[in-house]
Structure formats: C-alpha cells, structure tokens
Length: 461
Image 1: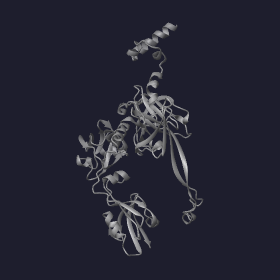
Image 2: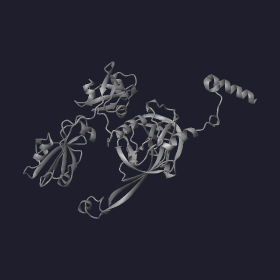
Image 3: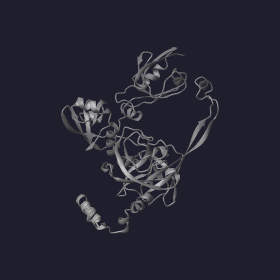
Image 4: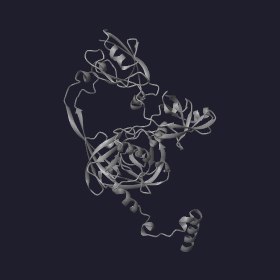
C-alpha cells in the first residue's frame, strides 16, 4: 500500500512539476529545506539601533484650557526629557553606510549601532527623508563590514518567499519568514511614510523597524517600516519600503546630500476609478488622470495635458499618484522616464526629463520685525521648489507664510497661509509684504488662502 501511494505521488508531481520530480536532494540542507544558509549570509548585515533624543517638555497645568492656557502661557519651566527609541538597520556599504527608518533615528541626538557579532559603533545621520520614512547613517570608524546587495524590487511578485530580520521588542536579532502578500500599497499612511510599499505577512513587530526584508537570493528587497495592528503585535500585515527607492536614497547620501530630493513632476493627479474609467471609455479602471500641471512641469514640457491618463512609467503600471512618483523617484534626478498615456481613444508614449524643482523665481525669504504691524512674520515667494518642499498645489503662486510668531501669530496668521492681499492691495512678492506691513493704520484686512479655502482676517491694533 505504501509503494502505491508513493508511486501515485511521484506521478502527480511529475505531471505538475517535472523538474522537481526528477531532482534528488544532494545535501542535508536540501533534505531539511532549511533557511539557515540564507540567514547566515544575510543576518550579519542587519544591525540593532539604539537612539536617544532630548525633547523639551513644558509642564503647564493650564495648557489645554481655552481661557487660562493663554493667560498662563509662560507658566512653568521647560524641562528636558530623554526619549529612547529602538529599531533595526541594514548595512548597505562595507564602509559603514546603514539605512534605517526616519522614525527611528531621524531626530536622534545620540545613536549607537550594535552589529550581529556584538561590535558597537557610534553613528551619525547623513541623510533623512521623512516622506519615505528613510534615513541613512554613517558608522564612525567602520570598514570591511558585511553589506546586503539590493534587489530589483520591481521584480518582486505576490507569493515570493521572504525573510524579515530585525530586533523585535529588543530581544535580539530575530528572523521570521513569510511571503510578499501585496504590491503597490500606496493608499495608506504607515509610520512616517506616505509613499509606496510592499506588503508582507512575515511577522514584524516593534523594533523590526528599519530591518531587512530579504528574498531567497539573499538580497534586500525592502526595508521594514510599519505594521497594521490592534494589539501592538504582528497581525500578518507589514509594510516595507522597496529597495529601488532605497537605492536612490543611498546614492544621494553618497553624493553628500542631507535631504533626499525627488524628481519634480509639477502635477496633481487622481487614480482612475470605475466612474472615471467609464467616462474615459476604458474597459477596466487603470492609470491616473492629470488634473493640473504647473506651466514649468517637465510633463507639460513633454506635451502632456490636463485629462491625459498616465498608464505606466518605464513599463511599470501606475494606479495611484504615489505609485507614479515612486517610479520616477526610483530613476532619480537627471534620468529620463518613458510614460505611456492615453488621450481620448489613443495610447501614446512620451519621454520625460526628471529634474529637480526649479528655484525660479527666487524664494526671497524675508522676516518682519520691529514695530511693524505684522512683526514676527516670515514669508517666502512661492516657486516650484517651495511647492515641492511644502506640498502645495501645483497652481499655487504668490507669497507663503513660513512662520507667524509674536503679533503675527496673535492676529491669526499661520504657517502655510498663502497671502493674497493686505488692506486691499494685491501681494505678489515678499517685498510687497514688508512694504505693506509698515502702513500707518489701525484697521487691517488680510486676504489669504488656508487649506485650499479663501478667507479674510480682520483686526484692529
């Protein structure tokens, strides 16, 4: 009976997996189907990170009171408090370059990194990017360290086997296994990141942040960043930042940049849903439709228009604006991307230059002090670089409020406001704001845009 069952199984495997049925295990590791060889290869490049930062904490019992909070604004002394964070990192350069999460080390004042072989190094942050939740560290005095090669994350598929390596709950380096359970997760915000993620069911817990998601070739396919959980532990839904974006962040760190700079698209885009697909004559919802384009946008310069539907970037399908920006960011500034788009019933291709957001016109930052009516105000001229830095609409123009202290804050101005007019006079430059703030009048009317809505501030001094 045993032989019959064995024969039937062999015939079945031969029909479905002929190569597997004819393969004879050559080693004990193959017989045991162990991950041990892969772990031995990848684990030495994953590190534990212990970070500290000092935060000033003011203990004011009236802080949340709508009346006494303002009356006793300066009550109490600011007391420094040390805040600790625990996470993981991945060595990506033999010279001690380590990538981790921004939320682990981004604002740290002291960072200690412990390798798998128990060696310890002091580290400093050399590049940060809060939007992608990535940070790059340099280990001081490190050399000849084991480093993980980076995979082409665009080749990852749902169902691929992966290992998550990190330091969960501070218990020490731990390895968990699973699969890639989702691609192009961009409609969510996880950790500090607001971008594009790979999803995995490999158990990830607090402390795994910044650790490695490794494929079966021993390559870094992603940097673990966050989980969705109700209990505080892993529920099988974890997210990793794809290695293709990590590669660009690391490249800019090696070039000496302190902040990651993305290519500037200068557009506002919306995912095509079922209703839009029907309106565009598509059989299935696909792509993103361009709603607005800045006049200097490289997409506009390449001939794209409002209403065009971007279907793919460099051969990779895009179904959300973050996914489109991810694919451009993975190419990097100075490169080119081929965009496939649909206009009407025709599908076309266009090559777009990936550029940094231009600083034209100059932002011309100015501060207003002294006895001026808007004392404490800091403003800058809006240009494409400012639009990208502060996340403004591509159509934004005029003057942006970046700080509103003292009197400027008390009359109701806030950072992020876009000034339109002061006392009926249009504001086109920061020089206009400085000049108009000197007016000898007690009645003031400031017209502005706040969170997309036009409003007026009226006050007397």
